[in-house]
Length: 438
Ligand SMILES: Cc1ncc(COP(=O)(O)O)c(C=O)c1O
Image (cartoon, rainbow, N blue to C red; front, side):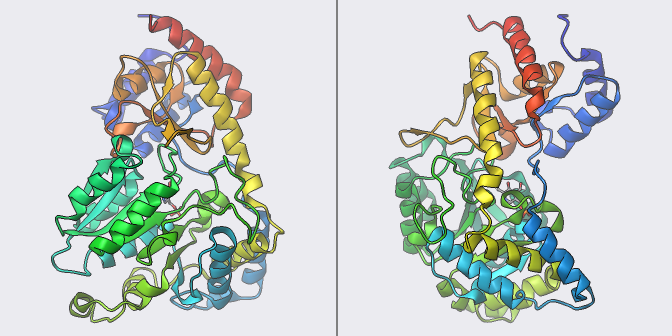
């Protein structure tokens, strides 16, 4: 056995201890637990790329507003189910400032993180038509949303978009939507895990087909404005965050505060339901939820039942962050550009030592550098690659866990410190030597 930076026995023992049968199928949490155990067992520090959590301090404008709200006594009061007015107004303004999309404040509804937003939306969408009982995930995607479907017991279909970019997307989507059983279509943009961003042509296709087949598009913007190839921070001026909302009225957008404002701990995001969808009445919602419109079903039935609103003080934080951003006082994009800078350096290092970027392009353009990137290594499956990299003190998650059909790994840059780049290079160099590509 070759000597590797991390004791192989220590790795293997802990894999066995956690009863992980296939490392390639291990969840993010399992990899986190595994690496914690290996590090506690005395190994050198890992270059940890498995966790998709913010690596920056929370936006100060949010923290300040939240402290002020708490000091003013909001903690004792239930917030309105559909959100406090200042947040609803500022959310609509934020969407106008950075997406150039018009939406009424009524449809801007805070949720306990985007996670709760997608849960509520997928639940209601699964009940709009009796015959439309299936959601469609454009993969690769965020595994927890499929877990939500599992918990709810609702059906979903999925396909890996890798081979269906550009003009090919239309045919692929039509082949699925034409069956008539799809109620909603969901994807993240920029995408977790691959960091691809749909082109305008692709978003237009999605929007047009959503109208043609009467399907609700759920656009998860957890990484809003983080396509750093363009500077998306100039309130009220292009370039704007790309969105399907330009091409259909049948949409829900999810804007999470977790990554763009590093505000994950307070669990407060916002869902933006288009005016048309918010007001739309569905016969089956009356039967299923004794409710009328889509908007009322979300707020007065589902969110009421789930958590009766969202943390009162955190709503003030989010309102303040949106306001400061729209006022031109808070360049949140600049604050998170560090992720892109680190990704550029790390991608170069991986490529220097024989790795390749799996999801590489949007149309003719190379993907941007951001929160995640994907890596593959010649003649290794994702599972083999992950298993081997653990011996070199590098952790990530297998792409197969995300609905991808490609062999490779998702790497997240947020928890890698710049002072680990030398270690990363040394380890990759040895990896390349031990696994020559020829
Ligand atoms: C694509 C995507 N959607 C949603 C979330 C969760 O967002 P929140 O923390 O607002 O619940 C994440 C977090 O990793 C994500 O990557």
